[in-house]
Image (cartoon, rainbow, N blue to C red; front, side, top):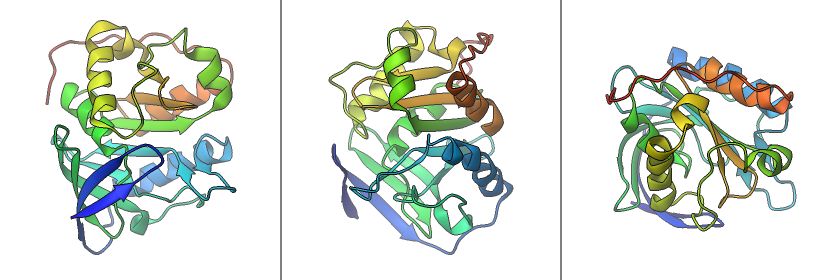
Length: 216
């Protein structure tokens, strides 16, 4: 078990180092990550050397998911060696179990909570944009300002947004307690990525019809 520390929290990672796995999901995630990287929505801070942004996709009909690995923000194009398979998340214990050649992103708990909410959610994109974060936090569903990145509280906050706001229809939310952070969900990687890019381009995608009670 490894204790990871970010600028916000400590979390436990049970990581089993395994060979990289070649799956169509890793290729698709890598393909859609490139335009997000080019737009400056995923990347790394040159001064601190800390990466930001991640994306994931559900594996089949399960709650397991493939997610970009920690500290890959400096790379434009990811390969299979830059993805981890998250097999289990215990939000109450702040614990992530993952397999692969790299450790999973510290946002894995939030991704796991969203996948557990609705089987229609097949992909999640987490980006950083100071411009969008400032402009949209009073327009879009937003997490509480005192809820920090990478914490069990953030995962639970998305549970609240899902049931108390129009987040299931808008499919994008602002993380007010995680400066510059936004999350988009979709029935495909393309949908989630394009939703973020549409807002970046000044567009407002239409609301999506949502069927409740479709837990996986």
